[in-house]
Length: 137
Image 1 (cartoon, rainbow, N blue to C red):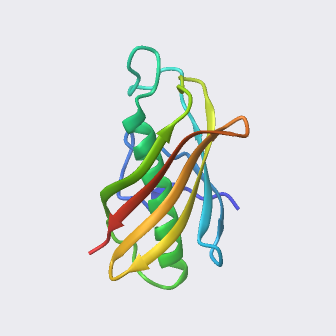
Image 2 (image 1 turned 45 degrees about the horizontal axis):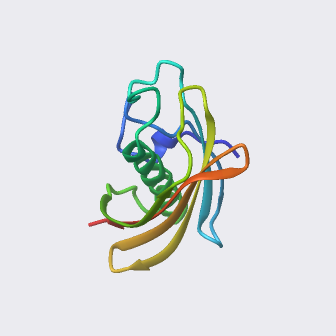
C-alpha cells in the first residue's frame, strides 16, 4: 500500500509535511507514514527542524489515519483541529536530509474528540513522541 496524504488532509503544498502513507491497519487503528526532509526544507532553524514542526508531522499522520478510516467507512473526510498536546518528548535533533517514518495509533474516540499516540522514527529509533488530542466537528 502506498497512498497520497493529499486524499486525507486539507493541507496543500508546501504545508503537507507527510510524503506518503505506507500502511494502515484499521483493526488496530494504526498507520505509518513516510517523510523525507528535503535539503532545502523551509522550516529549518539553526540547522535543525524545530520541535513544533515534528508535532505538526505527527498531527498530519494522525489526520491521515482518521481520514483513511472515514473514507473506507464511506464517510467524508472532515477537517480536524489539534486541541491538545497531552505528552511530548524530543530525543534527538532532526536535520534536512533525514528520512523519517511517523507512526500514529488512535487511542480513543469519544463524541468527536480523538486521541492519538505518535512517534517520529529515524533509523529504527524514536526521536520524538507525543500524545495528541483532536476535535472533529
